[in-house]
Image (cartoon, rainbow, N blue to C red; front, top):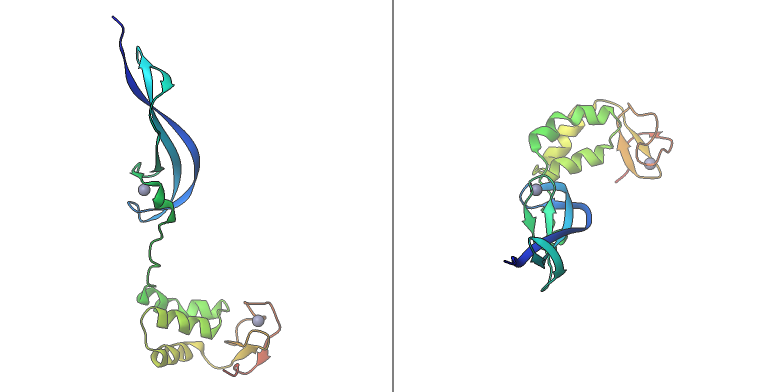
Length: 157
Ligand SMILES: [Zn+2]
Ligand SMILES: [Zn+2]
């Protein structure tokens, strides 16, 4: 008796990184093609029919349509508590005051509220970068954005 039928043969076409809708984060993927083969005694002999392409997440193992590679998750809103708790640390590291305020407003705070909170934590003394127009506390020795020399006083906005 001759046993014949079809078996699927899977081949990896390429791989890379994508945003997995299941893991909801960046993961490795393999783009695979499953193709039915005419098989004799369970040994694939020649391909029959069209191949099916899919994207397989290397972490959760789920398979997705190839279009999933164009999918982007919305940027997560910054966590307000985290941003608030790291203001002092970031200013001491040389983060421009404007950037810290921007992160607070992005996390949902009103601009004036954000500014007064940051000003209160920034202490006395301001420096600014004439090239970038950014304001710093007295801590950094140089502009952390362009490396330029800082001058006394706040930037004029
Ligand atoms: Zn996944
Ligand atoms: Zn600069």
